[in-house]
Length: 258
Image 1 (cartoon, rainbow, N blue to C red):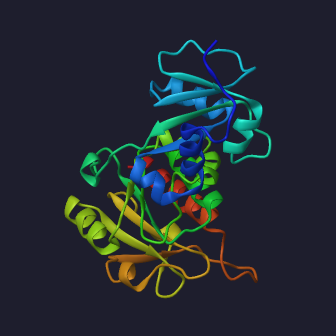
Image 2: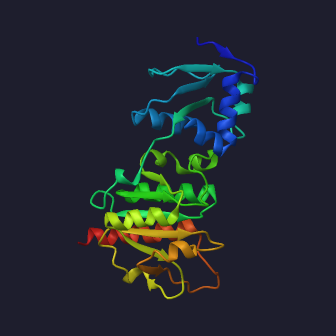
Image 3: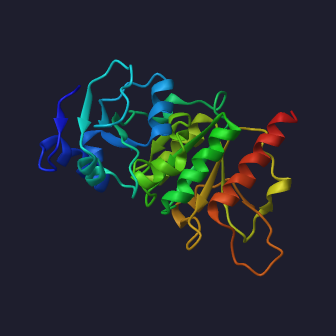
């Protein structure tokens, strides 16, 4: 059996704990913690080699060629972001990516997150993009970290299937996407076209803002047009993940009609 780590004072345990709690530390280290039976096994099935595989003392061994560490249940619970750890986690390298990795021909639909701060919403959006395929996401300023433990869990492994990019300057990122040949559409209710009438046949970037504030002035100024989902009831706005799903599937439907 692998050497058993039994102390929360262990340097590597402290490293994992910090990866779970600090976005800045994740960015500096270039890695994150993936935990849970299904997410880790999905990752391994996709051919991704983790930096380290971490198992509890009683978890069955996995026949996978990477460094494996064993930890006591108490240490696993200390590291875990969940109330009931499943005894398996991995340290995984954050992929290095740039917008040049995609093209309008292969990825005709890009969702641009303009300040979506809820991990559950972001994770659900990424799962939707995985379902419609041929899609990517740009994480604009003010967006929750993709590698936040709650976001990672809510993607249900879809973060490995959907190309993702961090925009440290929203305007520069949108300028780049325009030059690549994407049409830029913002979502809002005022002076916007009904999403059912919108032409999604050409490569498009759809900007989704937070429910509280919508899209920012900076991103709105970059838009070639605006799209809305009409609301007949008394609520002021749809949940952003629901709105993203509606628009993503409408875009897919219209691409398939070509």
